[in-house]
Image 1 (cartoon, rainbow, N blue to C red):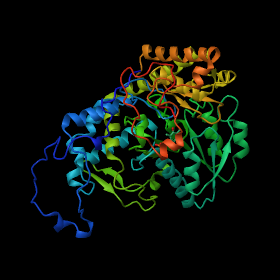
Image 2: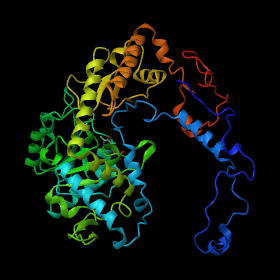
Image 3: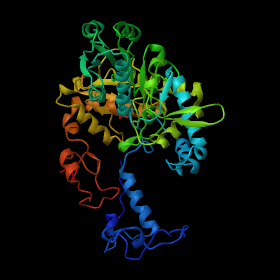
Image 4: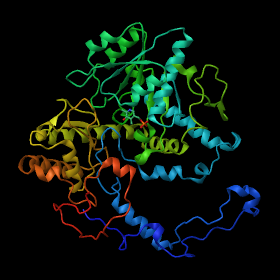
Length: 504
Ligand SMILES: *Cc1c(COP(=O)(O)O)cnc(C)c1O
């Protein structure tokens, strides 16, 4: 892999000269006022800020150089499991950037925002259909926010019935946000162990269920990429005891168009629009975690809801049983636009094809790699597959070494050490749009690494060998980042398999 930095290796603040500019400011289109009339003197600068003064080409070259150091889905395969790095078509970003959407002000009147309200209303109809649910609130700004909102809804529902149930059961394979959300909403969390097959152990579940069971939170497919085959029986057990079924829908991209959570017996479901419905979500946001519910829970949804009377759309704040507002205004609207554009452009058949291809691609990797890496569970998987680095560990090679070595092959590393229930876990999610050629190239790299683990483990434990920096002290790198390379990099600055001079 080659890395190109600009020749001089300067920071943006060290470039340019005073007075040099890369932009012309547009003419002022409002009456001009002195800044001192608008902002109290005490808050005004006396010295201009030290901003870079650079020409357009300097600016473009600087950021293009940096972007080439950055690995992204636009440059190569990104097999990160659990985070659902599915493909986000560019056209959805275009839709979100339409001026009618991106110039909206959140305090505009309903009269001037009918189009935006319509989009929200219709997105709710789509998610209802996809989820098999009675209604959906678009407000929560992340999956975790959807979980928390969903748990508040469960609590409000139980309280309205004078029911004092306070235990929520969650499998040991769950994402950490599940117990956190249940706990924050005032419930006590009970953990149910997974069986040897990676699925909920029904006999363990029966031991925990009782008259104090408020609900059960389950991820489908679960975080091991496995479909909970006993889901109907699980729902029967929980409902039979008077509890509610919550589905963590972060892995919905394996189900969309194929199976509906409502039909499986779930009462509350959150969607991660930024995972399943087309918002690039590296770097921490923005997101949207709509939460959908079955009929009996509709009164408790966050307010306002979006209503349509056949001619006009409006926000309904008159919802006396609502858990209240959980997000400023209408949540992350741009994420809603992308999701709407994605769903409408693919249609029901296209969405089902996305899920099918996600499942086929993951099972292709499973089939090709199972002879080289130990499979966590001997079953077909859904959209992601979990291996264990158990065999390689016998040669002194750990999963993190395998992940680091993949970087030398030009691939981003899969998710490692999650789920926690698998020793030396390697979790691969290929995404639905990758070609057979790309998957094969990745498999070849993984096989060559498995062979290296036996023949020359040192190469792995000292990897990566071709990246600008090798193994950083991760804590120190976050606390005291060194943003300048000590040496300018050139395209041929170092050949593979020689130790990095910058690795310390
Ligand atoms: C990502 C994820 C979450 C949390 O979603 P955020 O949008 O990151 O808050 C919850 N559960 C599972 C299984 C996830 O993968």
